[in-house]
Amino acid sequence: MKKILFIFIILFYCNESFSFNLNYPENFKLKKIDSDFKSSIGINGKTRNQLHQGIDIKGPKGQVIIAVKDGIVLETHVEKCWGPTIVIDHGHSFDGKKLIVLYGHVGEIFVEEGEKIERGQEIATLGNNHHDFRCIYGVRHLHLQIGQKYRYNKEGHWGWSYFLKDGRKSLNPHNYWSNGTKNITCFEKNKKFKEGSITYPFPCEKL
Image (tube, rainbow, N blue to C red; front, side, top):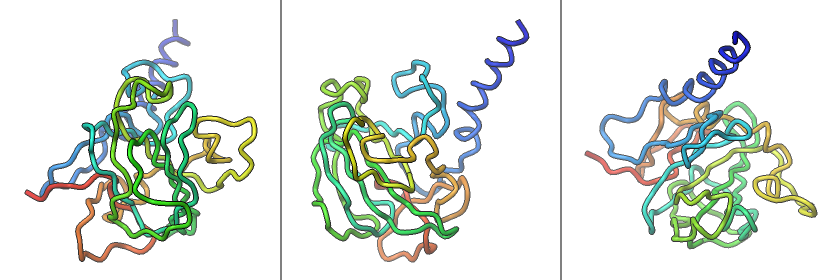
């Protein structure tokens, strides 16, 4: 009984420790994170087989997705389980870590491999394909995940592993917001952001 209780407590804190401590900007309206980093609960409300390695944000068909930082598009690919996915090399973080970001489960893609992109640039939209790919679990959403090692040899790999070599050790996005740890930061045109930081992958509406 004690062992079961211990496991429950661990799962609870893994699921909630990030979401309950996040600071959303008060002067913006934005779609909040639905399944957070290290969450044990999936976007479909069911228990995950492993802790979440990214963040999931639901949105309607046509929801615009924007780049979290300047970078170069490494790959655009319709993976058999993940569906349409963009991989962008966003350079390095302010603490020197490589930022290889997956924008997974998208619909229409607006960028091409090798293209240089800017923070806040529209790179994709959410589609109506959430029932077509198993890894989207029937819920339309963006999955954003930050790795450091891009996978060039794809043979035998699928899902996030098709794109990242270190997907099980992904970086916590909440450590890299421009306004500070756990302070979700909206993109604003003509605003200067902290070097090596990221901004939210959905546009925010200023109130």
